[in-house]
Image 1 (cartoon, helix red, strand yellow):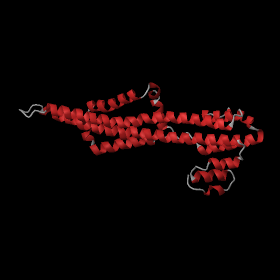
Image 2 (cartoon, rainbow, N blue to C red; image 1 turned 90 degrees about the vertical axis):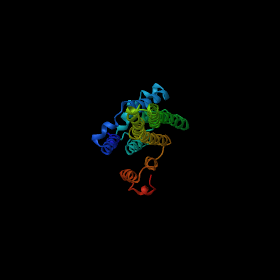
Image 3 (cartoon, rainbow, N blue to C red; image 1 turned 180 degrees about the vertical axis):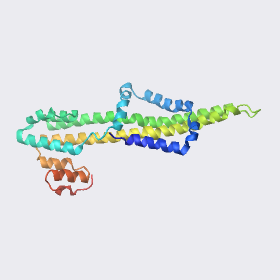
Amino acid sequence: MDLTTLIGVIMALGLIVWGIGVDKLGNFVDMQSLAIVFGGAVAATIASYPFRILKDIPKHIAVCFRGGKYNIPKLVDQLVDLAMLARQSGLLALEEKAAEIKDPFFKQSVLMIVDANDPDKVREMLEKEMDDMMARHDEAAGIYEKMSAYAPAFGMIGTLVGLINMLKGMDLGDGGGASSLGQDMSVALITTFYGSGFANIFFQPIAKKLRIRQAEEELFCTTIVEGVMGIQAGENPQFLREHLISCMKQSQKKKLLLKAGNGGGAAGGGEG
């Protein structure tokens, strides 16, 4: 489980509370401002996206707390094992191994080369599926990026509402309207505070974490595509290993190459 999102949010809230002062927190609680900012941001988001995307919001939040699902070094080992099996027993021998693979994209990729499909067509189909997958992830992250833009905008709307009410209620005559001046001014200022807070404490971090998870999955799927295409082409398993880890960090390269008995000799390339 990855708790960095939760830790970051708690730290941000804690520092803000400390900066305000516990005894003064009541000054920053205003339900009208909260309704304008949070309610407005949610309403605008609902108006912007179809239900098929919005219904997955609980899954998006779960992804933020999910640990490292994509283990690239382990994937490389699996692909090298499949390459060795294919060279010894042929591509048809991979069908039984494919049944043991849990990841749907990985399993589908192996089965496609087992069926002796044209290599160019296999790559085209797999890359098309990857593009569709990344497009769905773009939509998911886009929800929170939009909300991070909507929240300050509705904060500004709340500020205008408060200022308008304040000016409308001002009466330079016999003290009229002075009693509501503080309330209207607080709505004007607190909505801006809420808008900035929601955008930078909640929505932007969620969007960024989803982008990071998207990049991890994209690297995982790209490694699968390159691996199965190498297996179908009959590449040497050791050469395939070196090819697949070429974009990894130096420490991961050395670990995998040493495990392969290569002595780390090919790990002297630039930092991935």
